[in-house]
Image (cartoon, rainbow, N blue to C red):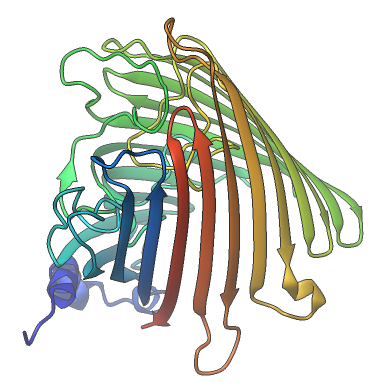
Length: 423
């Protein structure tokens, strides 16, 4: 082939920009533009130790991803306009019917799927003063909705997002999401509630866990450099409404020494076609000394159901980790975490993390005893700091899970990434 699927996707995504550039070619539009291409090589192995001989015993795949992102500046004038573009291509390097289903590729157990898949989106943006409106492809990172980027290609949405920072220290967000493209799919689909991966006790009416539009709004205020509070609202029409409160405070103790407090509370109720009813409280306390960080986390679920969030996204939970979210009905969980940044001893770019999370009191119904689970994670990563391979990153992620909700899992991920600046 003389033209790859990635090149085709980029061409479609940026067609509008290329057609309008002659009329938009103002200095700031060009000067502030940037573009990059990330090469992401991903090996994933999950040993499903709890399965029987008749079921899938392992998920193991290897794939290569190409992630193109471009952001323009804004045209001059009272209202500035700009264009962003995203395109992704995933290539299968190794898979089989028996080992499919890692979410690296668009497949499942029994069907290793196609050899490649691609996706693309474009975003029109407008700016007045310090307020920006984006319409089109979005990858929000908010407590109410946070796009997941833990596989080969990132999850993305179609919708509109308004962000305003007119008042010093105050950030306001509002918008609506219409559809989402999952991290292992090339198609946009309706929004839904994540009801898998735990004991939620969710009950839905017609259309199951699929809802309509997702509306969101929120604000955060930085009272001081070391204190921020926030409130965010999310509504998946017909299924749930959610109010999220947060507080982050960093207490300086001495040079290279601090104590961080991260408090979170969420109240989630139904929106007419579900039984969703959940109270969530989470707290994470982290003591940092030079390159060392030691954290202790606590998470508590109460109400008639577990915690609800958009399917496939990253929930705003302190104990949401590599595999589990510890968000089942009535679950209480604790986390102990340790991080070390080797830059403190003269090896910049090398980092290490390990954590252990234990959850219990899971409501598994009247006929079963209370459930328990635990997860142990370890990450070690290195990013080359200089030379010809600058920005080349290598990360190994390991996890072990023993859970009445998820079963018994052993997992390894090896990720090699390299980002090439294009502009």
